[in-house]
Image 1 (cartoon, one colour):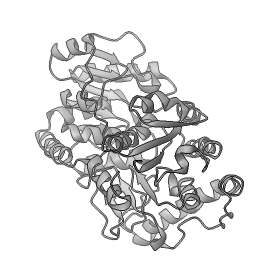
Image 2 (cartoon, rainbow, N blue to C red):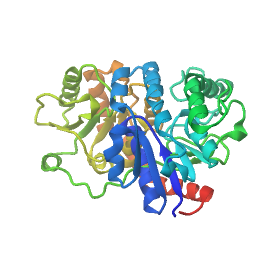
Image 3 (cartoon, rainbow, N blue to C red):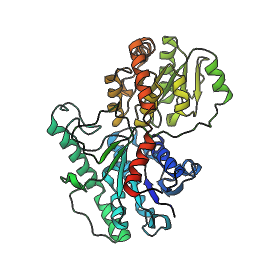
Image 4 (cartoon, helix red, strand yellow):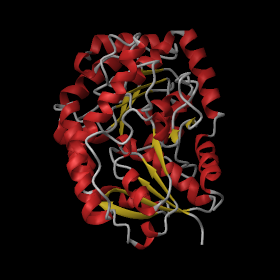
Length: 414
């Protein structure tokens, strides 16, 4: 029997895709993989030939209900994760013989406890930096004092402890009733014990975020985890639009909710027209482009970013880790229009690397700012050159293969 891996991941489509890509690769080299996520991702995961265990609830509804408010989003995500208590049964036939828990959830909740019950290792997997460091504060944390090493490290400990306090009652009830384990104390899993932290896999590039000097050798920056969709073919209308003129702009905000999609679409159309460019609007969960559009703008519901982005003149997006990675991989300039949490972090990294424009928060977005950013992205030759060079470095990283090697070194070949 092949070695078995259980992947636990919750969140938006952009949150799930990197782990789906990793799971698909692990399956292709011989591991058995069970993917545990929200029920609405069943078709996506099953289509990759992975076993799937559905968690009650709909990630899209959770994000829409939060209104892009970080505190509401955290509460909603915590409520969604409670559904794991009902499905993560150590006597489930696949979970029972798993040899590794690969856990995306913050501070290792559920995965840490399940691994303890089964007596197997857990690897923390993430696409944003979560390991404490003195180099920068916790993603989403106020950065005003980010040059203070003590403040930076403390931000992670506060985040971890607050997360644990919010989840502790649910986790401890599940530990007693389902896992047969003693409840855990008020301190979180790691508190001040750095040596007790698990191996961590990071699905982003060392060329985008330099490795902090205080991360030890259990921290592995692998490169981005992209899903291979080489067999995908574009619909005729998309193919015709691309062939009809110069490379267009890409504009899309992924899974972010927008209170007034029509007004936002009008703003985007005005900026595009004033810039003199063509554009592709990705509808996303907010339904951007849900109105009559000029001939120079095409609305699409889907296209693989690895296929589409290299054909663009610039990529304008919400700044999620996965979308940011795809934009940088493509080698074209980009701009983040962040809504919350890590999106501001990645937007600032884009600007700091010189491969795009300074981020424009969605709340401050207007057509004049966007038009000016478009002109910078499409006319600045230095930005274009730096974006192209960085794209080449990222494409050479083979992130899923590096993650697989780390897993293989830890638990053995399939």
